[in-house]
Amino acid sequence: MNRNRFFHFLVHLVLITSIVIIAFPVFYAFIVSTQSFQDVFVYPPKFTPGTDTIQNYVAAWKTVKMGRLLFNSAFISVAVAVGKIALSLMAAFAFTYFGDFRGKGLFFVIILITHMLPLPIRIVPTFELMRNFHWVDTYYALTIPFFASATGVLLFRQLFLTVPGSLCDAARVDGITPMGFLMRILVPLSKTNISALFLIEFLYMWNQYLWPLVITNRDEMRVVQIGIKMLLAGQAQAADWNIIMAGTILAMLPPLIILFVMQSSLVKGFSMQEEK
Image (cartoon, rainbow, N blue to C red; front, side, top):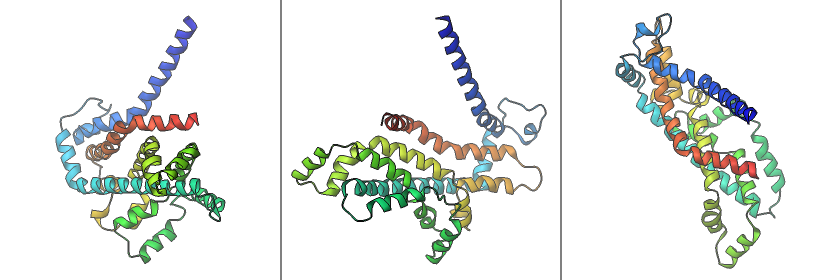
């Protein structure tokens, strides 16, 4: 009993220590975002909130037009997440229930191989393609190259393989079309996976920096990650870290809200994958 208590105490101590270490940069960023310019450079550093909170956040908001950048990031993240889910559902449906089309296995392998080619590797040909389409500085270029998802296809295909074939036969007898079977039967069964994939893809797109930097030239088409860099680049001498940290905290809020709202779906999604 004593050994169990000591083990539990040790586990909790390690977990709490890990949380403190991981959360400390965020905590310190928030503290700095509330301090004045002079307080940021005081030694030893202050770990108590300052009095310039509103001024710093207003300055960060106005300096780089943070509202527009947050809208761009949110729009791109939601559009890509929805697009990936829709395409992945249809592709997984085809691979699972249309077993007689030629080259099925080869196409599936090719889709999996694309997972090994992240965007930075193919950024030059992708940029050339977008330029030939005259999509530079548009939402098309910021979203469409990310619509394909090998992870999504694999995730939904594995789920659809667990659906009994008798359910498909019963739907066919009732006169339900293939798309009706997908929308009325399979999509409701995939709610947990859809939520988990939406959250993962939303966070992935929210953190995109390189591609938006390459494919956009106008400030109104930039995303919030570039906005933070613009805050830093605009400093002539010593950086206003209080304003930069205020911008960073603003950039963190939307994904934190999405993560907080959908965290149960994410946990359920991972639990289902482990059970399988």
